[in-house]
Length: 232
Image: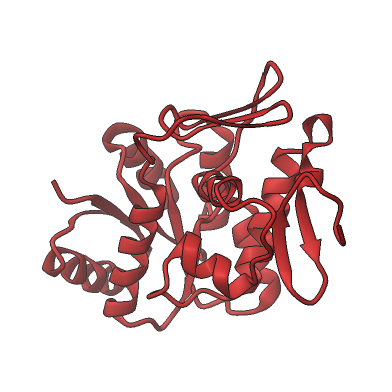
């Protein structure tokens, strides 16, 4: 069954254009013109992906995104921000607030569909894999659960996938481009700065008992997950 995508934008022309592109690509679609309607649909219908406009009258898309991330029921729903704001500060602010991806207007329908498909692929849970344990960290890809000691660790779907990649590729340094290819998919353009934002969020989630030390920055090369010290 095809995924359902909720389009949240106060401009009817954009909603209709995106809706046509989605349905042509085989997706189910829903529309909302403001944050309040969108939140109701998200709670009631549980869409697979939300396309969320940043600038809307009343409650902004960014405020809605933060509300979704604060609520356990909606915290894991993948969100792509749609916006005319292309500045780096806006990119970082959107990703820091919990967006899984970010696409600036104007955008091509083909690129948008590719981004949605890539997002769905990387947020689908991995199956048939045994839990991975490093120190007190336990990563279970089947139950989509991460814990450190007795404490359950909350993280977004992108951070979960990024952690899974690192745990299955320990002690090797990966550039930002390589991480993008492995975690986001090689056919989708995403700014390299996106990697830095999600690395920062993953480190924050793993800060319990100093487990963030395993996510290491290798100057001039990229990142690695290792129990060794950088330079060893």
